Amino acid sequence: MTDMDPDSRAEAEAGGHRHAPEESSAAGQALAVRVCRELHRAGLPAHVERPGAPRQPGAWVEVDDQGGRAAGLYIRWSAPELAETAMQVVTERQDPTAPEWKHYSEVVLHMQTALIAILRLSGFTAVRAEEVDDVAEGDVYVRGDAADGGDF
Image (tube, rainbow, N blue to C red):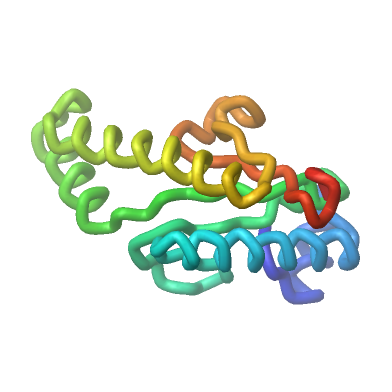
């Protein structure tokens, strides 16, 4: 969860969802801002995910602060027009192998590779998110950068 207000944080924790302490979350937010700055320098749109913010094309950076400490960042490539078309075709045809879905999936995987390469060149510790979370296919996971010793 990212950028939680105190009431939402208290409610989530009362429901059994642990989140990182405020200091650790602040470090995660600072890392997210550095990641976005480097992606912007490379010419890519990038946004720190905020509750209720509309999805725009580009990289969406989310602080992974569940489990009691900020562990890193998830970065998802957003291509809303391709995603919408792919989902519409798959739903209408009931065909998960539709070419439109394959096209969208391939774009996401190519962007994953590009994002990892760009972030590593900039000094970040970046990996395929599947190495951290098997349901995060296509995402990038950033553990830190040289400014924080590669981990935060």
